[in-house]
Image (cartoon, rainbow, N blue to C red; front, side, top):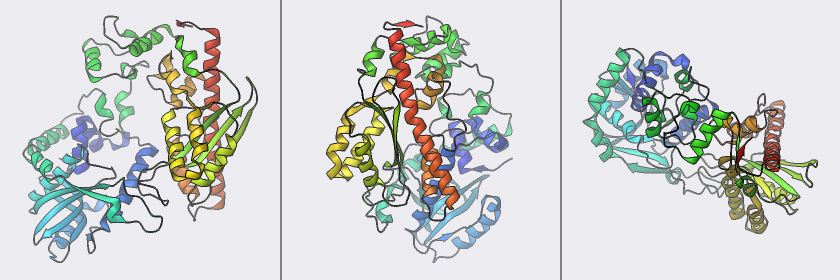
Length: 498
């Protein structure tokens, strides 16, 4: 019988099929760059947290040496002078955990301190700490309490010294952890039963993404119809269960008597007909066609550990923008771009150049206005001398997302309204495939790599070109989506399929 780990136990609470696959079929897991970036950030934050426990000792073994880790942990526990143990390896009843921090309270009494990169305590954190307390007590430790150490997003970095005592906050989760203790034995027995049997037959659903994304999505959805009901916009669990009880797996097969929202009905009808939907409101949503028009896209980083003076954890800091300006219908686009290329605070230089690029009047088209507006307001707060111009740009923003989300629908959107879904649907001739940087997360990773002092010149130049190409592709996509929607309005000014 395999050993249960803390991670597998949490996976099993989310989905027993994920528990099974993580144990026996790791080869099926597919992780994206966002997953890997999250793992790396968690490791860095965990390492920083240990600095708040001077004199603490780390159980320095990798995952292939957990037996040795158990021995090392026992040796360190026997030393009464050790105030804290990091990555302690503990086992009881076939369950093995690594505790982020075991903090000595007094004598032989301990506190479990679980470190998270979040900015507060979440419901899914309680079983995480609870299983550690359960195993530690079963292994003979007197664990009296449990804390969650998380990021304090109100901390403002002074640009000189990282104040760890202010960067981190601690919240007691003892009461919640204790409430789990009576339930854990039955839960663990159930998970061991799962691992002793065949792969569980669990249909994909909301558990696939909540509270964590699942790396086995492709495996579990293999063989689903092209127009699977999961891609119905805003599909809730109740509707999904109802459709499955009727044997309905594809959107086009949803019966007419099933209660649907207007958007869901529109999506079903588009799938059935194969034609997009266009409502008269589309023209109004796009706005009056006037020139010059501008298209704007920002790229940002939002590190958990702030890098620049005056910034907070997870604050969006722009490092790049691209602007296209078009002065007449069908005219040539004038391109402007800015990419900060060193490790200093990018905001002033970026903002000054942006004001120059957008000094001409005219609407500024973006996709998902809240993001660009937030970046502009953040720049205005940081740079009060430039605030009037930056806030003027914010006032000129026109969002292309609402037209896509409401008066227009295309079956190929598959219920997603992200720009990366919209572009191949409306503009099949345009693609992000083959780019060295293909999304915002990759852009942030590439930028941080580019500005590291040890990045080789050739690699720095490659990353610079990749970032400029990607951000420019986004603004070009904005222009083409805008013009595509205008063309649709010109040909059909009434609610119809075409």
